[in-house]
Every structure is written in structure tokens, then in C-alpha cells.
Image (cartoon, rainbow, N blue to C red; front, top):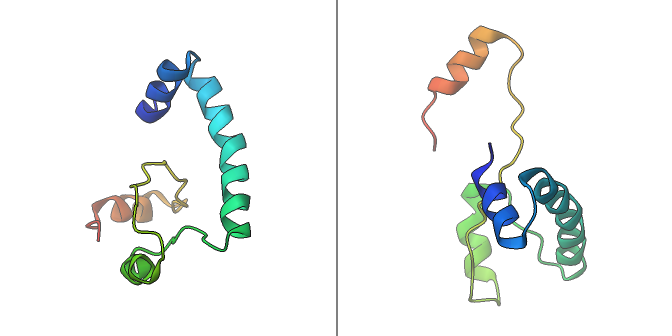
Length: 87
């Protein structure tokens, strides 16, 4: 279960699955609009501070969107990845 999608579904009167579909559709639209406005989101956490400081926009929100993470296929490597501390 994806809690954020459950909440969005509830707020807009749709199922979690339908919310997921709309998030996928609208994410592409948002990404394209940000690219056209020359303000794509920063993907590297270590560069976020510089991006925020140099931005002309002064109101920011935190993105809670779940993102796919490429996991190792090997089970031992996958277990080692899970034990790594989050930076």
C-alpha cells in the first residue's frame, strides 16, 4: 500500500490505483513544464543546497513522491544495501 496515493485518492474521490495512474500522467506534464521553465528539480541531495540558494524562487515544498530504486539482483548484495545507513 502506498499511503500518499491512498490520501490523494481519498481527497479526490478515487481509488489508490487510479491515483497512481494520474500521478504517472501528471508527473510527465509537470516534468516537461519545469524543463520549459528552466527549473528542473534537483535529483542529487548534495547539490540541493546550492540549487536552493541560487534560485530566484523563495517558497519551497518538500517532495514526498516515491521513486523507484534500482536494487541489486544478488540477494547478498541486496541485504548489504538494506543495512547501509541513509546519508
